[in-house]
Structures are given as C-alpha cells and as structure tokens.
Length: 416
Picture (spheres, rainbow, N blue to C red):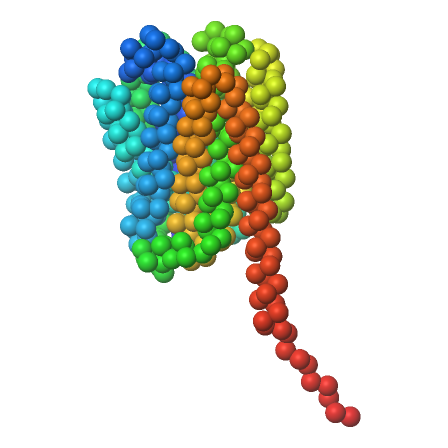
C-alpha cells in the first residue's frame, strides 16, 4: 500500500467507517420500527393481536440475518482474487440496490426477500473493509482495524438509528429505507475517492479461502459467536415493545433507548478493540461473563422507566466489547484465509441475530412477556462462554501435543 499522510489515512478510515454506519442503519432501524412495519404489512394480524404481529414481523430481522449468513462466505470465496478496494466499492453498490428494493417491495413476503438480498454483502464488507483498515493503521492492529469499521455501526446506533427511527415513525418506514439507501450511495462515492488502492492477497483463491472450513476450530469459534452473541439480538430485536409495554414509556422514547444502546456499543467496541490486541483470550472470557451479567441486569431493570436506559447501555457495551475479540479470534484460527475468517464471523453474528430474534419471538408469542427474551439471552450467553472455554482448552492441548512430538534438539557436551 502507498505511503499515506495522516490526513489521508484518517479520511480513508472515516470512509470505511461510514460503510459500517450505513450497515448499522439498515440492520437496526427495523428493530425500532418493528411495530410500525408490522402494522403496515400485517394489518389483519395486528388488529387481532399486536404482540403476535410484532413477533411475526420479527422474521424481517431473521431474513436479514440469514442473508448475511449466506452472503458472507459465498462472496468471500468468489472474490478472493479481487482487489479489496474494488470489492468494498462493489459491496456498497449492492447495499444501495438492496435497500431501495426493501423500500419499494409491495408486500410482507417480498419485503422479506428484499431484506435477504440487501444483507448479502454485509459480512464480506466488514471482512474486506476491516482488513483494509488494519493495513492502513499498521502492523499489530487487526482488532483495531475491525473496531474502526465496526465503530461506524456503533455510531449509527447513537445518532443515525434514532433519527431514522423518528423519520420512519413520522413519515413511514419506507421513507426511512430510502434515506438509508442514499447513505450507502454517498459512502460509495466517498470510499472511491479516499481509500487507497489495496491489492488482493497474492496467495488468495477460492480454494484457499474455502480451506478454512477444514479447521475444527473455525467451526467451534463460529458456533461460539452464533450462540453466545444471540442474547444481544434476543433483547435488542424487541427493544421497542419493552420500552412501550414494560417500562410504559411513549413511542417517542424508543429512539432515546436506542441512543443508550448505541452509546454502550460505542464504548464497548472501542474498549474491545484495545483489549483484544493485548490479550485476546482474557478479553473473550471476561467479556462473556460481563455480557451474561448485563443481560440478567437488563431483565431486572427494564420495568423501571429510568433504569431501562442504564440496562440498555449495559447491553450495548458488554455485547460490542466481544465484537473485535470474536473477529480477531476467527481470523486467527483461519490462517491463510483472512477474508473468509472475517466473513465467517459476520455470518456467525447474524446466525446469532436470527437465533436471538426467533427465540425471542417464540417466548413472546407464547405469552411469557417482552422481558422473557432477556432470560433466553442469559442462557445463550452461558452456552457461548462454555464453548469459548472449550475452544481455548483444545487449542492449549494441541499446542502441548505439538511440543511433545517435536522435542527440542539435544545439545552435545564437548569432550574434554
């Protein structure tokens, strides 16, 4: 990569982060507007039971998550030889088209299809943009590079998601998605102008990227992320009805609760990137313990209109602290396939999105109430912690076996 001035470096990082900002909008706005979308697309069901309509509308979130799961490894394999800047620009174009389709699709099922298509570039973008950002920052900055791009997503939850949620509540959810599409189009132009040309991995190929799936650790770490992070989405997917039906706040309070989540995500992401580059194992294991505690705290705090905001901040901070750590962990266990490792992390996170939203919808539809997904999240977090511990234990055992098989060469004692 060419030598960059400080201004050019930070401008390029900002452009890549704006892509994360747009992804944050398209992924999380649905959560704040879920009652509005459900009422518009499922009017008969909503008239019978708003709770069941909202739970059914949660399939929009699941469809997006499934699109990420499918798109991330597929695009990573097919574009292994593509220069990474070219890949990032192309993915932003696909985001723009998919989000426009989401805004114009006429019925619930077509909107589901459009959300699936719009999600296809999600994982590959975070993978490719994160690797480009790491190369811009410099050696030893893998987690920081991902945190820089993910920082756009967290900022979206502080500023963008609440504003777009207000726009959707006032002028309709379709206009909200048109605004998000415009954001992607502007980001595409900004990236094209500011990010330096970044070549593909010279050893990269579809076969090399797919070889990552031969590693049992790749599968184990992916399952850890998919299960362990599901609690965040079980809670965040239904944050709007928790605000209005549990804390008994007005609809206008929903964007402010989202701000609290976003502020927590911003703090957690920054701390997670810093901590993971220093001690990845400790960051993951301690991070899971704090995450589990924060989900239990949210279940207890959500009933009070004041403590709800503290609980929302805790969920965002503890959840996103794990983000850079999981990204670095998957890249680390997929040597020679960095793009696939980064993309698989996004697939895993969105399986978590799908799993959390679906399980949260099940317990709500079963009559357990809007707080019940928090306890589902606690169970998922405990399972994730156990899987992370198992992964590190297996890694340590393998390292000891390699040492036994390759003993240090004996030294010769000189003859007197």
